[in-house]
Length: 483
Image 1 (cartoon, rainbow, N blue to C red):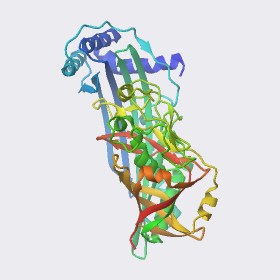
Image 2 (cartoon, rainbow, N blue to C red; image 1 turned 120 degrees about the vertical axis):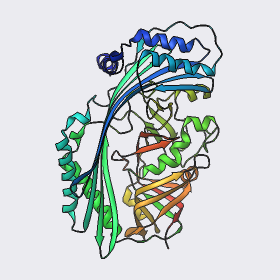
Image 3 (cartoon, rainbow, N blue to C red; image 1 turned 180 degrees about the vertical axis):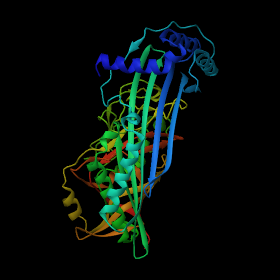
Image 4 (cartoon, rainbow, N blue to C red; image 1 turned 90 degrees about the horizontal axis):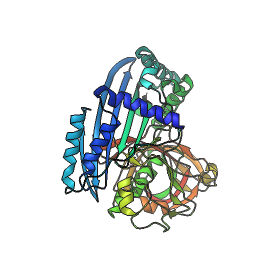
């Protein structure tokens, strides 16, 4: 980002968050100096303004609508492994000082520290500082959902019901730190989702699709909407013809793109710094060791333009990075925020994230994906005598400590004699994340990122993320089925 653009974000943040209550940079320095007068290692102030909306349409009618504006400041002091945190939804100097005073409990009173010179950070421009909510009128947003509904119904007469929703957010954040750094970001985010119900001969099945990213509603052209509708309808119709899934240990082929959610849940969380510092991850103390099959390279990259999981700066004001976590099967590093990086003696990776000003930051993923291999996806399918092809996933859960996971397949097929044959439903994939990494025997050359729908939960905080992978062949994975 140019210095001008960086200052533009800072100017926007100060105008929106500070000036209405008469707070200036000298006041922020004074508050931080108050916090650092206690024996703490680090302190920061996190200001946030957010405006968000959502619309839901069903059977041609708007059935739900929400609009909210929220703003506030989070005040944090860190001493060793201890963190003191307070927040206020009222941004004014007395509230700031009161919150700052509340953080003194973690340290004894020490010598007062002098203020730091204010510094600003230059970061790359990953998305335009636009306001998605203002990009369309209310009527235009409803019409957009109506077109999506119409596209889905026109594809096949067996579609009996369509539910569509749209959501947008305009967020401005600013970080002021005890080391003198000030940084700001303006973050747009939009998403559209469509769910369809197909009915035939007394049987009902559903399919879903959608997408989004860090741009405004103009992204959702008729071509994009039609693609979402096609994918949702295809999934529902496939499931109308699906047979019960078999159970047992078998070869499983995962499709490219959204199935990377298994990678995110079963492996990605285990690579976050806090779990490894505490020794609760299956990957703790394994840097430099072979933890996956050769050919597997996994990265977390918060610098991809316009992606849902991308950030110009993280929630501590540090630039996000492209961090190689596993390289050719060797564990190279962890996802870090400043606290865990400092305590582990490792570099920060720009992965400090928080849901809002009312939450403390922690190491979180951004866009996490596996790099391409050298196999044609058709070659992978042809290599399977009998197995399961999981083209798309639904929900899942994982135990970070053990790495055990359970995932349900939203769209799956049997593979017989090297060919995809009939669709199956009710298939669940059961395994252990670190173990699965060693069972990958073929990696496709078709890496794809998801369409922009992912939300990650951790310790009660939700943040937008991205996932991705190429087609993968996994040997000997347990499939839970219905027969």
